[in-house]
Amino acid sequence: MVSFDELSEMTDDELKRRFDDLAKNTIVGTAFYLDEINRRAASKINDSMLQCTKWMTCMTGVMLILTIANVIIAAVS
Image (cartoon, rainbow, N blue to C red):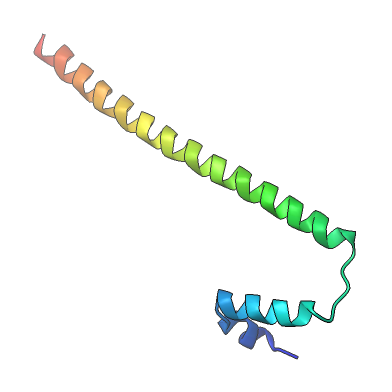
C-alpha cells in the first residue's frame, strides 16, 4: 500500500513503472479502455484550445499595436 504523500512524491516514470507492475496481475474491464479513449480526446481538445489561445493572444497584440498607431496618426493629423 502506498500513502498519499508517497504517491505525490513519485516521478512520472516511477508511477508508470508501478502501473506496469500492477497491471500484470490485474484484469481490466471495458471502462478502462473507454476512460483512456476519453482522456486522449480531452488531451487533443486541450492542445487545440491552447493553440487557439496563442493565436488570439497574437491577434490581440497586433490589434493593440494598430490601435496605438491609429491614435498617434489621429493625434498628429
